[in-house]
Length: 128
Image 1 (tube, rainbow, N blue to C red):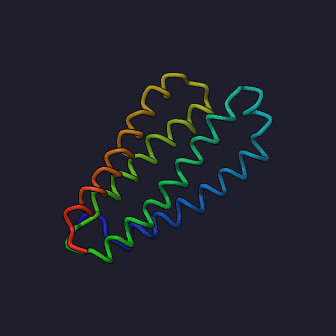
Image 2: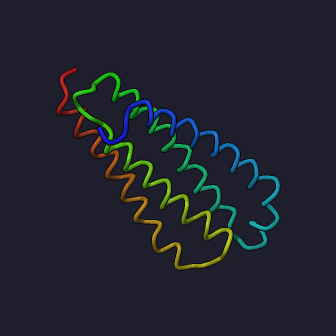
Image 3: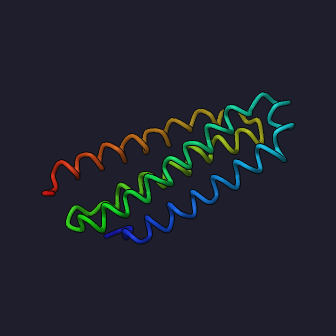
């Protein structure tokens, strides 16, 4: 197992915490900067997808405990990679204004999609 169920759940908890922290920081300290540069929506999207997939990591860990033979570790890795690339590139875009960062965001989105598809596939193939 590459990524344990417990590691997925811990990562999900940490990323959920960071989503709330980053979101609050953006809503208060960064809001004038983000509004001035027309990047508030982009920032909010990054925070939302980080939170959704932090919760997805918690779910992945729970599924890993419930169905250990299915090995959901790759699903967890795909969600982590998705968060780093999707949300990370959007955070950097918001902070720097470097437009080409938006071109790598879909790579993170593809990792999210692959994670959800693989999760579904593993659940279909698992006896419940």
